[in-house]
Length: 187
Figure 1 (cartoon, rainbow, N blue to C red):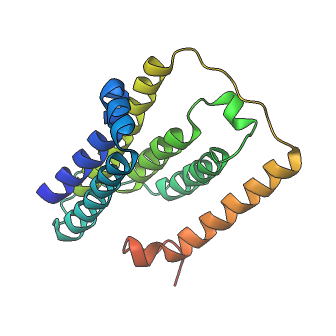
Figure 2: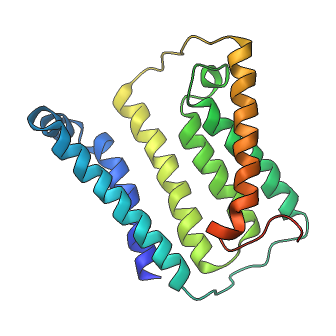
Figure 3: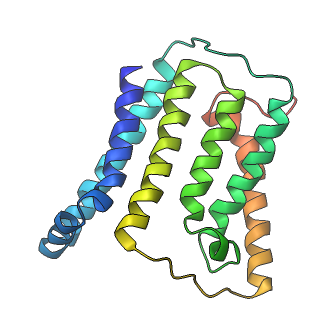
């Protein structure tokens, strides 16, 4: 469990640093862009390694058992999460409604998984990353000030983006047993 906790903390702190210390970040970027980006990337890779190692080596200890209907709620929320994540990549009407669609997708992803996964390691991973996304949104709002809503793209671009998000979700559902160890589709 220690490696999982360390991984989530390193991920969170690495991502929070630009919002918590914008002047330090600007100074680092001014002195050497490659150095800062390299350390940032290395920290993220190490955090992902710690998360994967910690997840696989943490014994499963159930804190609660999800109800029967939670699988449907989880899948519905995951659909929302994939659409939000995809919408964050280009000008969309969703970005006019939600200031941080990518971070909101992480929060929705975390809540969806907590509905169906009641073991302690899930609470650390999904709860920790959900808390990070929420704090990150608040810090970015404070740092950046008033929200300037972006212009929207064409309907064609939005529908194409939606279709791409749905295809990526289908692939993620199909690959879920391989990267998470849990099959979502009946075998």
